Length: 577
Image (cartoon, rainbow, N blue to C red; front, top):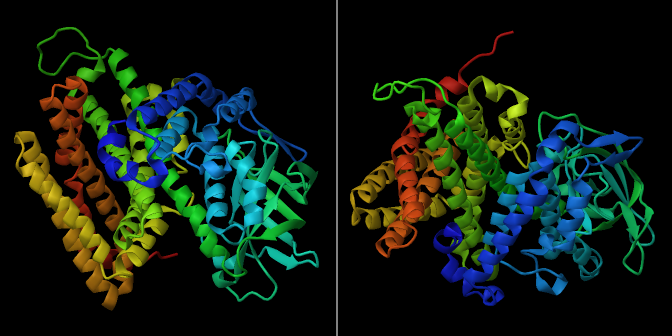
């Protein structure tokens, strides 16, 4: 709620016509109710699902015990509908509330949370690109959660290079298409939780041009929808197998075989990749939020363990007996790093969610560009940091962290997929540099930096802590702007050198954005403290922002060095046989 009120542009978002029916009290009630559901119904499933996993038998996938009952309650309580339009049965809440819900659900059990996450993406794609008939057919049951959605991009020969997609779609006399091909890595491509599964499938029509420009997008229901809207006969979509994975084991990752399955064109032919990017961008933002979720759960577990585990006397010699390890300086360093990375990601995601709402409902090119600039930062930074935070959680547990029974290892295993799916970190970095920075000559990136400079001016008027945060934020911004200048210059004369630094540039920008939003949070917390509100909570907010500023923002200078000095050693290195 702190992030919603102070960091999500709430004053502007709540004044939009779409959201004037909701105030902060309404949002708090929704978030608290959702939190109870996640804690009581979903969190207990996490360990069971990790141990048992989804099961495959003769083309059918069954979920671990408890998932079906919990999902039925998820549907009954209407949670899938949170942020979707009321005209199709949704609650119509802002994206910031949706981001909070995604975080809580995935912190409780990321395997479970992936099903609603993909359905949200399918809903968004159909809302923006589907025909009136398709919206009428699919949106209400998807928003209700009775049906789930998937995205089908990857094939054995076509991973990130979607131009190699070979699945075919042939027009039939009745206007439908026969879809044939094999898709892999399809999250929740087969399961027993919903009445129907709605696959959004990239495929190639016979006359389409080669490469990515020849792809079209099709809606292919697992069960053919009858005229009355109910699921009918099985479509020719078969689950061949599910993957055996490092983590998120209760989330079935399917290999799907399409054998002249009945599909329906979404929008126009040869615009499929354009349409699919709508779903992908929604999923990318949500994957970043999953990173925050996994980080939060790993931090909570590590904090509890550090308070309980007694080991070794303090180095200061003031106590002769062993103490809880939370008293030891390096354990405190790790805990604070976990907390500040998690809260920094949450602050950045809340701000981005607000920008996405403003961009969707207002015709302001600057806001649209800034929102688009922030999405790869949320995905790239929060997913990469989730792996680090979960690893620190294992480290705090010591040898017990390497033992599955403590649960710390599960967070590490679950987190490892996050920098990979919905576009690897390099893909996010290339998107940031190529589409978000170079395309407008760095204009959006400079406006991003100018907003940060304005926050620095506010911090300079504050107390010692605020000034320290501001000084470190200014140094990090300087590193960003110097890197930006170098990137723009080298993209014109040595494109390989520029893209050799794209991931460091993404991590620099993400670290800067997280530190900036924590700094804005510190200003809001100080105002609340001055008003006598929630002293312990607000003091901790300021302390977290200060730790991030002094321990993590300096890493922006390191990334700047990698960008400026590291390209030649990277590009000139040899890999002899």
